Every structure is written in C-alpha cells, then in structure tokens.
Length: 404
Image (tube, rainbow, N blue to C red):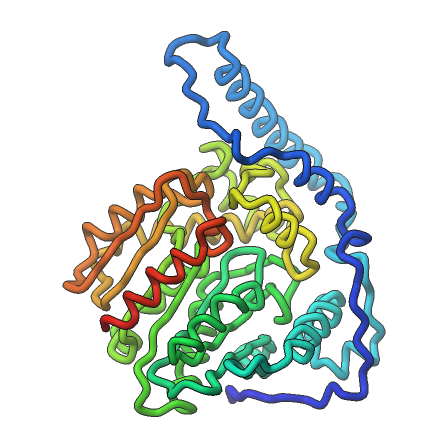
C-alpha cells in the first residue's frame, strides 16, 4: 500500500558535517579552474598529430584496456567494494530512520531532514518533508514548499537530475511559491534521502513508476488544482516517459524541461556495446571511463563548489547499470518523441556537453503537442538553474506558467 509517513525525529540530535572535511580533493580543484576560459576544441579534420587527435587516441586506449581488464580479470578476482560514504550508521539509527538497504542511507536521510527542519519560515514559504512508501517497499524522501501569503493557483512537481537531490532546488521552489505555486519534490531511488545505494539505479522504470504513484498522491491531496511537472536532465527524461502515458497526461497541465537527457553521449561509443553486458554481470561496478569526468556544468565557480561539497550529491564514477539505464531510456525517448502531447517548455544551453541541445530541438520539432516552446541559451552550460543568469531563466519559466 502506498502511503506518506512522517516519523518523529525530534529525539535525534542533528550535527552539521564539515563539507570541506568530507571532500577536500574537490574544492581546491574547483577554485583553480577558470571556467570563463572554457573553449571548444576546433581541431582540423584529418590532422592525426593534433592534440585533439592524440586525446581521442588516448581515450580509446583507456576504454579498450578497461574493457579487456574487466573481461579477463574481474571474474578471476574478488572485487573490493567501494564505500559510498565516509560515514556509517548504527543498526539502531538505521531501524529508526526506516532505512532499507545500504548503510549510508541513514546519514543521507538525516541530513536531508535536518536541512528542511533548519529552513525556517521566511514569511513566504513553509517547507515540510514526508517519507513516501513505494509499491516495492522502498522509502523515498519527499518534500514540499507551500506559499504562505499567496493563494495557491497551481502545483509544480519537480524531479532532480542524476547524482543530485530535490533540496538543491530550494531557491527555485521558493520563487515559485512567491508566484502562487505549491511545489513538491521527490528524491528518486538511490538519491538524496531515499533508499538505495547512492546514485545506483537498477531500473529507471522504477523511478517512472514511483513518480506516477507520487503524482497520484499529490492529486489526491490537492483536488481541483492544475498540476505541472518540472524535470532536469535525467529527471526530465523520467518526466517525459511518465507524461507519455496517456492516463497520466490527462491530469497534467504542462511540463518544464531543463537540459533533458533525450540524447546523451558516453565518453566513447564502445560503451554502447559493453554497457548492456556489464550492467548484467557487474551492475554496481564504477566505470571511471564511462562518462566524461570533470565536465563543467555551470559557469559559476561558487555554484560548483556548493554542488560538489554537498554530501547529498554523488561525486563518484558512474555505476555501469545506471549509465546503461540512462542510455536505454534516452534511446526510447528518441524513438517516441511524437507521443508527447501535453504543453511543454524546453530550455537548454547551447554549450551543454552533458546532454545534447540539438536533441531538445528535435523534441520540439517532433512532439505532437500543439502548445510547445523552446529556449536555447547561447553559451550556457548544463545546470541552467545554477548558472550566473539563473534568475532570468526562472523568470522565463514563471512567465510560461502564468500564460497557461
């Protein structure tokens, strides 16, 4: 039975962890990077001795050597499992927090709850949290932001991207509150304060099913109010697959998509071949060469420091099964874009190297929706709501909502 529960956590004392102590390797690196000088490589085609050509050859060698090593040696030796957190949690705490699965979930959930509890009412918003039970028995961390002084004229259900969590959109949710929208956020499986190994997704179809169930609960608690969905990156891909179900689309007024993962590119095409194999044999294996590492997602250095020092943000190498699932769902979306019928707004930065902005253009062109809009921001990167111009982007979103 699907339900929302809110246990009593008042007996626990929360401690604020030192971000600098937890992730010392990332902050000096980020401070040294000068993202204002990021340029695209324009190596001349046909010059095999160019730096670009050398880099490509090097990457091919690394990928192929990784594949050979895995195929030949992994079955013959015991893999040492990497810990996902430097924190551990006692069995008692694990039980009290309703944790199922990996130990670090208890710490992540406590941190997520602490942030909600400490976020005092600012006169415009009231923030709250609930634990949502899925049909599989997993517990998901969900939260809400409710307008105080404005009449509620609609709902926005947001879904975060890969490796992050709903709490990162606190600033966005409060601006939506100021415009009269009540906001709900759900940490999907393996993320934020929800159950599961950190950033491991056995099947994105589970996240799709969970969002459908969560939407149903939101509808029941807010009868008669129009509902919109917001999704970022992989979260946007999940939203798209949810909305392509006609039984859900009938209840959704519109969707907003930022940097949707309609098309993603692994670091090398060979990953398309080996991902299905290794996702079956070694689903939780962390494949360091599967994705481009240290790809900048914002031109704001402070936003990057805040993201990568956040203990609820996963910063390890992508797990093979997770990467394979993203490729599978993006492939499905590319073949079914015409099934999108609800009004939508898609926003993408033209310099995004994580998800493909041309795929957003294709989504706009092929979707069957009669009410559709697209905004491409020249030179912007992947995390649009954390770019220096994020306020202008939020304004574009609110203006679109106000016209519906």
